[in-house]
Length: 137
Image (cartoon, rainbow, N blue to C red):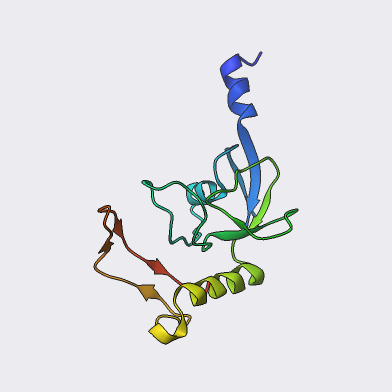
């Protein structure tokens, strides 16, 4: 006989697929969190533990089967049976567009190559921010 604690743990788990890799994770956490737990990299710019997840930068967008549009992985909750692509052509093209809008060509950062700012930039709220992202993803 299964005790209540084991039953609750099984009910709160979700089986999902990210880039063809089957993953069992907690239902309700974000796609970004589930991917990180599985060692799958999804680029972000605005993700920071001191900030609310709002998906403002759009760099963490992913393709989720059954959704009409790309979704921000930092705000989209995991549910049972999800099929997620983090590196499809549609996703990488959209990320390139996002970087082009954030870093227009006139400032020499948008050459679809590594963007790296070092040492970390400190904002007025004293959060250390370091960007390391690629539009090639």
